[in-house]
Amino acid sequence: MTLDLQEVLDFAIELSKQAGEAIVKGSETRFESAAGFDEKKNTADLVTETDQSTEKLVYSAIQAKYPDHKFIGEESWAAGQQADVTDAPTWIIDPIDGTTNFVKGFPFVCISIGFVYQSEPTIGVIYAPFLGYLYAGRKGHGAFVTTPLHTQRRSLPLVEPPPLPSFKQALIAFEWGSDRSLDVMQKKARSYQRLVGDSAAGVEGGQMALGVRSMGSAALNFAHVAMGCLDAYWEIGCWAWDVCAGIVIASEAYVFSFDQAAVVS
Image 1 (cartoon, helix red, strand yellow):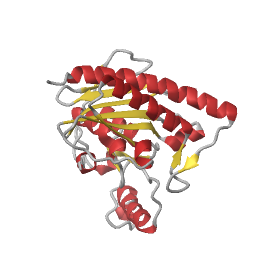
Image 2: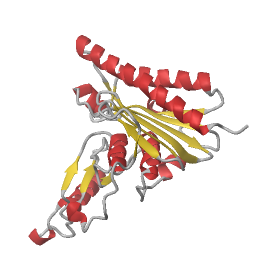
Image 3: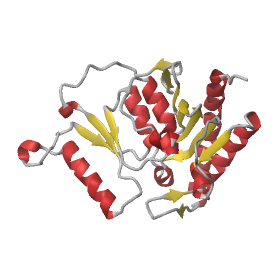
């Protein structure tokens, strides 16, 4: 039986809004009760009750609608569940992308819902409930965004900028991640230096990028590149739930040069 992918997309959009409501309520409860958080692998890798309860909400809804589909979630993986992608239709979820932002009350927080069909990222939905921005895409059918000011769907990218004359005009997203080991930090520091350094002032290989932004959410970085607000996004060590939805949305907005191995292997 052929799967109705438009129906899957519509379902994912509604599910993202339900999850967004849960995230906002969780934030209100957290600040009212001074609820805490736990660490996963280190003090830069956090998890809250809202992460876990939101993932359960999403999982339950998917199981009720599509009982034969597989599910990979960041929190269930952290609890020991396997995260292998097969030929089976598979949902790849980050219940709260930007948990540190959520803990601190910084609004760059989102639910990221990716769907892999026939081993390919096919549907992506990213919803930022504190901002009211919803991004969605379906492979071969484009991507769009809605916002509080523009409630009608607008195709991505919002504008089609001409090719940049050089890297000096590029605004780039760059994240440091939670792996703070020496080897990783040295590699990232070297990359950062080359991205923003001034070769004329002695920085070897420096490209002197216009600017760098670090928002703390891989999914929203993808979304902002898709919109055309950012020119590029650079990071080492993303997981499938960080990038699955974003890859679909950005690819449908004519963004290129992704390493999709993290999603399909």
